[in-house]
Length: 150
Image (tube, rainbow, N blue to C red; front, side, top):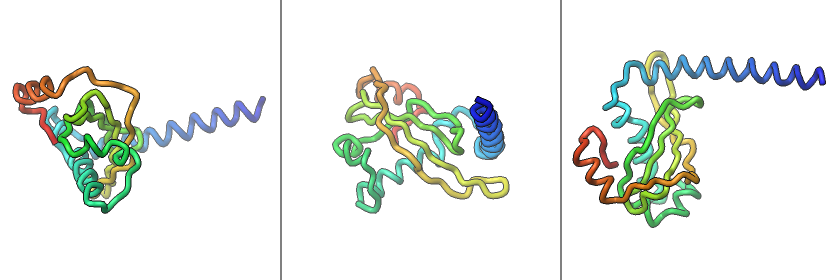
């Protein structure tokens, strides 16, 4: 029992230290971002580039492969936030099937006081679903130009 409690304590301390360190780097990554910057940034661009690399056959991705029929369409960001893993957690829906929500984790490599590189680390088709139709998304984007299609 003592070993278990010690293990839990060590895990909590280690997790807290990692989270605090990442919080510091995320402060560099997202310092003073406006709403517009959260919806138009290099993390999202990196995911668009990742899709294009997949389509050219430069990279393999099992999730994208399983959903090849919809990733040819544009996508919109349903939600984006700083990731505990460093970088951004992005939730996107593709216009050809907006009912499916994809989680994308894009890492931002920090050097000194700026982000110097981006890397898509994970793409997952979530169990969540979006109730918006393609038409509703297009109307929303037209009425809210801060949101865009990628």
